[in-house]
Length: 416
Image (cartoon, rainbow, N blue to C red; front, side, top):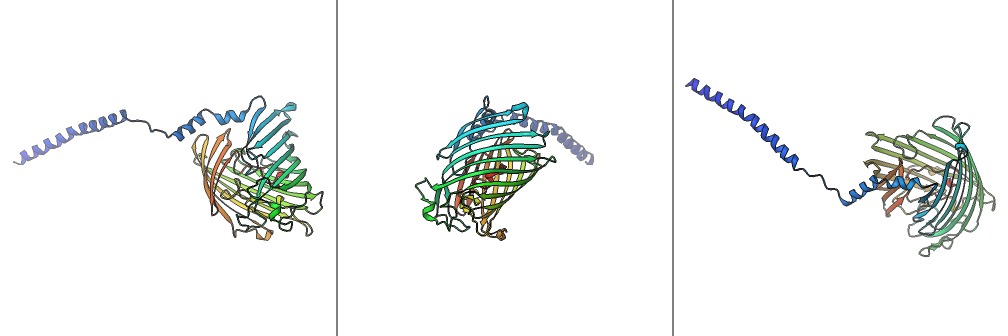
């Protein structure tokens, strides 16, 4: 009996072992059948359109131009509407010593801008750069809520600003990442009643004591010095490195003798790339600090503004205005696919009357998300949606959020 039981056990084990390859074959067969009937994931219409937009290289074609001519889009002051116009550019003139460009734009809100520039980028074997820039702007309805950090959003007025500027800048590059230089120029300004009839004109709501310069026009001669330490991997579309800029400018009132002042601009940017630079943390700290003699004032339109597409993105353009400002920005960016990045961000900042209030108290804040369409390794189109306790704002811009501004007059004016 014992040997009969042992024999039965051996037969069962042998049968099981004989079935094992059969089971493996069945599993492999099932996998093959499943693979044969697999279907690709269906893309949504939005995803398909984005892919087609990328694959057709529309942004690259658009920015390349034709025989020196190309359309210039955007770069109008925040809130000015969609701006477009022709631009003519030539690079490498004079055996590669000179680049020139000239443009004219008009926006959907009837803002105008004319600009011309001559740049000599490689003087003294690449150690020196000189540029001469002239610009004229007609901005008929800039928003203004009054000077001070606590102005109510219901007190919304508008004013006209027309200005013409000429700036010459000489910069030296003693080391690979360091730029030192100076700038000199002249600024003509004209302030008048706002053209947007939906809101009161600023001079009807604010007195000269509340808003200096609202009743008297002036012009400025200005001189400045600056330093820049820039070790970004790609200044047009950085994913790693830093850019630290400091500029000190003297503005001399050449007409009224009442509005001379001095300004310190500091802009610190840091980029931290990881996962083969498909993920980027972008940080910025920026301050604009003004000073004047006791018998001098700063015109309200030359004071720093906060609010809009470049700083506090959850607030209306030019929402806050005072003699000094600071702003902090943080973004997390990730590559959705080649040519398109997603972003989530947080902004914080404030304006204040005296430098002693330069601290982290009483900051206004906003958060949001956005998309970055890239061409030629830079941000060609930016869409941001910002949220704050005053509501939300949607921004459609043709520049990077941390775009490097040119040195000179624009450091003191409503930015492009």
